[in-house]
Image (cartoon, rainbow, N blue to C red; front, side, top):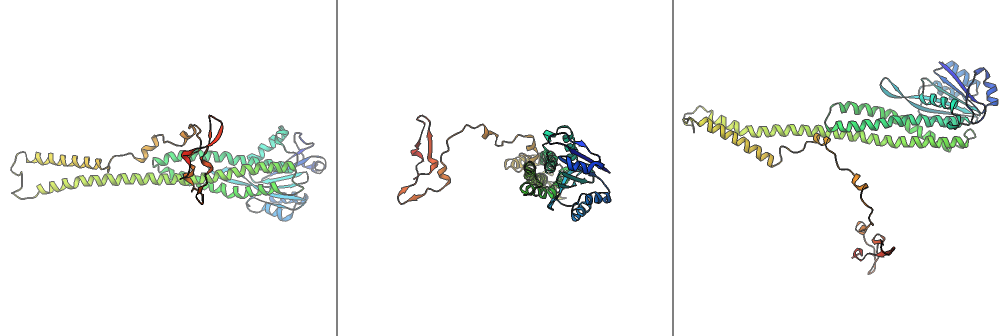
Length: 388
């Protein structure tokens, strides 16, 4: 349970710690005052917010259960809800950060430590110019930007994990299923808060309020750009996770097909051999080769020959052998990198991609058949490309 206060006496100066007993004087003389409430009892939070004149319904939201990101403008002050990314019990979770901004005042309340808040406080006390926070709206916007960068770090790790799982999926590793489900759960947690948070920042960027300065608008724009990038990256990661599952299912299906094929080939080879042994195992007297000393050897060699011919026939038809899907993970596939090394060429033959437009009997030559004549440095008509 901590109440921490900072104030900036003049723009672009270092923020200094503030004793709460000097709050009224600081609000009258400082550029801004930031009060951060960390895991404070509900009664103390309500008392402070009432003292500062915040809307009672907004105060109830602060004390209420977890809310999705939103903002409300009450004229003299604004209430904003953002969510920070935290790790809890080996899984991703979000921490609600409630914020009020008013004239020369910003108040934040959260139940657990938030890395973005700690980073911003340190920057304001050491490098105020780099932080670029000259008013409460700029401080809040800068906080939103730092919260977004934390999401960005986690999504970079998510993409790295997906690449690893993709390689494991080719091998049909059963652990892939558990890992993919864990990543999809974390992705769902992030997406639930990230989408509305992006909309909140977009609205604050365009909000016509005296509480948001031009610097605040620019900062909210930067925070929105980061969150927009996050949403796009999250959508791509979700699609990649589905691709990993498809790859794993394909690998397991291929393994099952290989097993079934091997058993089928084995049965196809053993069936005639079983027929032969059953035929010569009948308890009759007049059976071919019964009286021969080398009868057993002839039958045995014949069975081996039949098995070899069957194997050769199955291999010739491609029913056994071939490249397994798991083996492809050890090979380097051919992607699109070769296209980046190709030289630039004039665009030709595009007329085949679109129909030729004719007016009467005179054809209209598409623009695609015009190409630069390098020797004379002018445009010419290629007769080979004229429409029929």
